[in-house]
Length: 126
Image 1 (tube, rainbow, N blue to C red):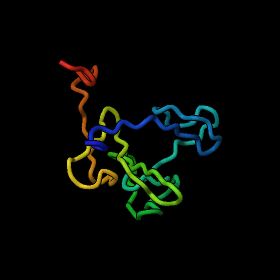
Image 2 (tube, rainbow, N blue to C red):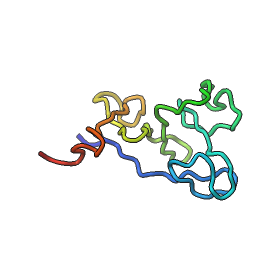
Image 3 (cartoon, helix red, strand yellow):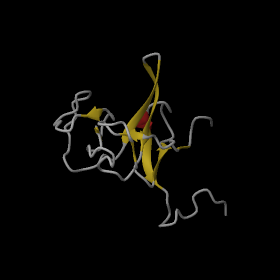
């Protein structure tokens, strides 16, 4: 069935809010200017101010010191959201639940299918 299965997003570059240098996935601070890595809302994926207590887009309380379990990515065409998917922390991947609109992020879950330290069989046929 088209549109179903695993969604494996391309790695999006995260830019430093201070100097726009590209940050490595593990960088907590920019190696060029020292600015802190930007923070994002765990519910809607909106960028957060460094001292935010609540998300200005959706109102979700910002949990200090804890990483989001996923970030929602949206494709916007002419100002309208055409589809959304969760961006999952490594090694998890987004999987369609099997029912509902495939363009709605709520119908996708983050699943760890690494099968062990080495990625255990992902992509192998056996």
